[in-house]
Length: 495
Image 1 (tube, rainbow, N blue to C red):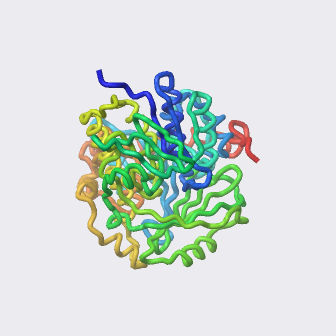
Image 2 (cartoon, rainbow, N blue to C red):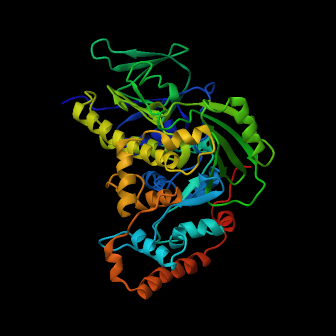
């Protein structure tokens, strides 16, 4: 029998490190020792403040109470993302969570909607999605026995603190210190221990690299390699700053395109998170800072800071006895708030495939293959936003519109344009409703709809569409105001 994993060492804190510590300590802590090494002197990126609904899965596994988590992290609810100026200047759309309309066995709802548009009896596609309508009118409530098609805006620093307290309650051990050396076994090249600046040695069986972009273990030590995706996702810089709230909270993230990238606005209970994602080839850091400051409201809480990144992925997320989680594994820009999802997927998948100290090749290869498929599918979804656009007003947007794209994405675009069908595999993160909203929102309209729609008479189609829309409107009208619900459900405990 090979030796079982007994000591897991997590290098680095932040959201990725403490999510990993929380999961291992809570779910496997009776049999595994969890040690996290981090330094107070090394800042975390800390701007991954918008999530997607899959975070419910992680919190359910750990039995984290939603209201308590939200109150402790100044969190608000998120029902989607408002994309402004993406299709073209002054043309906006919403990518909301949840399901759209009603499908049949042969065709998705979009086919019925397409004929309805042609006949003048269908309205905006979002009118047939409860979360879409609720986000526009600022209403929301968590209801028993209803799908949880909502996510969160949360303070990344407070979330890490919340998870640290949770982890330590279940036995995770935090060691303060800076890693000065990663020690390898001379025979097999596995990581044996970490040496800290004070000389302390931290030995382990399995090492989780949460050291951020540099990947101190996975790349600087194990030289795993990196696939650069900047030719598809050319933005390589961001500037982040926090401001005081000046407007009522909205239950969605704002993504506002500009000539060289886009600006985010993430509303928390006590402040607004702001940032500008841009391509340094077309905009300098100083000009980006000026552009951001000209387009935000409220008093600054901190100084703007520049974050440099390179979109892409490690060629292996798991190499020898090291698993990269979070920014150390790669980075797809934050446009659709997928970073925390990829963190939790890596953690859960790692625990599902926990090896012995021999690090069985089949287990490692299976992990890497699944993570690669997932991150490439997300990559394609993000590239879609940039490439399918009518903007030609800047060199940046002309490049995005004309650039070569992954063959896998081109096939999806062609299929939808020709037939109205949305290609999706069972394991993909983004469902048909997401692809549909973004493709339509960016201006991609199918050339035809499925012939089964013609089985309905014109009057039947109008009634079908009208009934769905009216039912959703009544449901949303019965909900409380989003801010009122927050104040009663999860009012912040942080001043």
